[in-house]
Length: 305
Image (cartoon, rainbow, N blue to C red; front, side, top):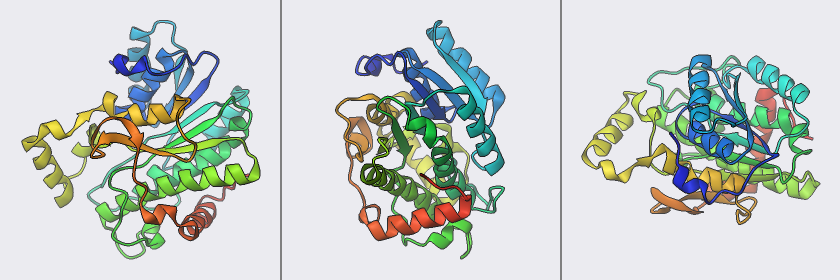
């Protein structure tokens, strides 16, 4: 089930094509809303069974929905290339790209197929490569938009790009914060480069506040355990995944969304309808964004136009 209440705020999307990464939580809720408003939606993820279930649930509520699942593993550069190649062959254009899928604070160090720390690799770097590879389709879209999901936890203690490969050792919370800061920096830098180079693609950042998703149940480190205790004692500080999807949906569809804007829930950044959120100083630093962009091109071997 999705948030049908908020869907009245979304314009009709007939004729639009959207790709959404992530088959559960916020990814599912975004796909549900976009498909329900008439967009053709490709739901991309690494679990075919879960993806099929998500598609079935959407079609159960919207029988005429144009929604399908495609396999995509953001931790595997070969999978990203294969998925993108398939989309480039199958689609005439792409109007909405929702970079949502992610992992959160694995207990032990894990790495992508290219040796990158898993959180940085999946949450950010895989989406950087995916967006770059799909960019020819976005340039052909109508009011094309790229929305990248950040987090309230986007302020690592230090800005150290060596954490992308865990060169100084693995710190789950620090790597997660870096990955989510990188997501926001990417959105801001992509918007600026698009504007300067006339690419015609608008980029946005969004964060869900504190959401009731399965991400919080997959780690057993100190910080995650502490959060789980807090959420048990104060369950009202978290909002449903359907409500948490509202900032991303606003950025993706609203005529009032400002390109380069960063959207989150209005009440203390935790819950409520979407509004512009505070951008941390590191994300505003052009020098740091350029350093991140250069590293991203180096690690992925993928470049924008």
